[in-house]
Length: 370
Image 1 (cartoon, rainbow, N blue to C red):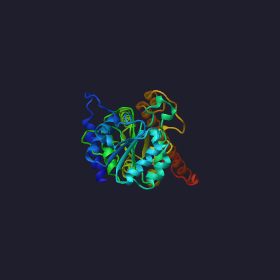
Image 2 (cartoon, helix red, strand yellow):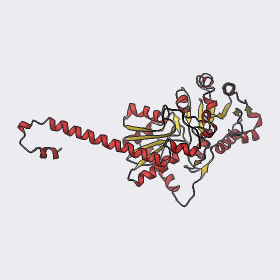
Image 3 (cartoon, one colour):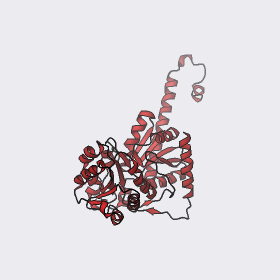
Image 4 (cartoon, rainbow, N blue to C red):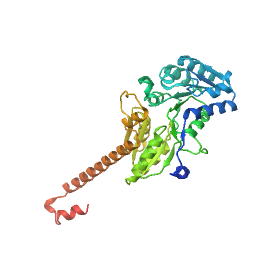
């Protein structure tokens, strides 16, 4: 617990330093940070390779190609072949990073990921670009809300979903150091900077971005900024929300989730993903076996989403700060009502057990003493 408290202090210092309202927020382009990280990593390690699938520029490989053209391999719209080749490179001692549009680099070549990469536990690093509603305007095929559920079921696979530039940059370096396969989700929309440049990313570790005692809000990636804003709105209404950033979805930080849920007794997950098999499911799997508490999942229900403008969709599906805060308030109201009903039931059972024929004091006295 002392390690958690120490992490709390560090994160609170970070938040306080970024809290100056007169300082305009910084917004990070995830693809730019990935591009810089990949090129810098390639400079330090000659075994690093870049594999693209008809999207070398859009997938942020232009800088790597410019500096290390002979270590860049373009496969066109042949993701299955590219994934098999990545496995071959890894067997040969190389460190391949394969990048493409998220639905194509995960769903289209799932068999190759499962059999060629994960079963053999190879260090193939899969960069899934444009997760969630990132490019929903391109159509239903490019609206991806199921990837975590699909990929999280694969043994040996580590899953990163960073929330801002510093996390994206360091996640690339961390992936290269992991002995097994890694899946990094990359969001297209610019992300509000949460961390300072001296932030230290640790695979498998979440972090407390805001301390609280009334309810734990667990989120990641694009929803971190909205969740923090929702926590501010809740604070204005007297609700003290703790906010966790779970940027490593697998293996998930069980210790942090359990510690926070023990403090608040109430957990709400927020994700730009289906509520089936996503962050909410991962958190529930931790809580149900070790600390069963009341929980709510905010995300996309079990459906195929409509397409359209990004911000309009975020609001439509209840992921704007205002709607997140409203959903949390409704959840807490339900929780309070449940406690009240349970309390009344306990009182009723106690009163019912009294033998009224032998009662020597007024019933009002007995009731008030409960």
